[in-house]
Image (cartoon, rainbow, N blue to C red; front, side, top):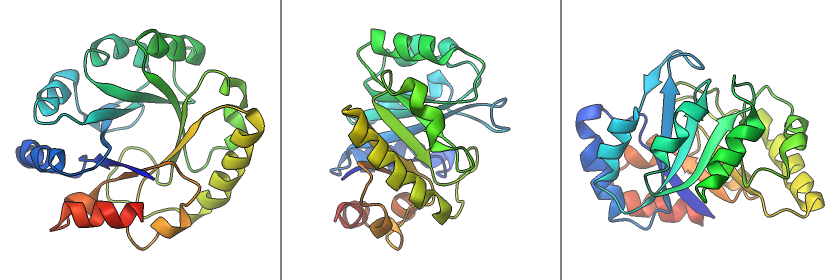
Length: 211
């Protein structure tokens, strides 16, 4: 199990310090939520802000675009050390073009699916994606509680991937903590925010999440 840490709930003045501390842990990725104020109401993490944040870490970035037109962002963000870029199903750009552009840079392409969306909606894109980002909260706001109704969806997704014979990773994002992580054994990556960044011992919590 890999762990990707979101800093969306961290106050701006504290972000550099938190990222610096995370860089000293064995966490796998830094999870970056990019919001355009249109796909979701909030704006967060412009390219210049993420570029500045990345100065404080050698960890690869796991970028989650909550934007209507990710094609406007990909070329800039591809300049950073990025493991994956994930976009949502219901965006204004053509998804196939988005995935092709991401792959042009040798970056993994992910599709994000919201708690109220049917997992079968990803079927037309199984040959194009490397990661499915299963949202266990609704996008746009940090600190929400984990939605248990997504658990059957994750199980169905695991079976779907197995039948596809594709090496697609499952990344679960939202409300994950030490109390519910044991329900997520089918995931390959856990994207976790406050359970880590609000803790007194990052390494201890990261290790427990993996266990």
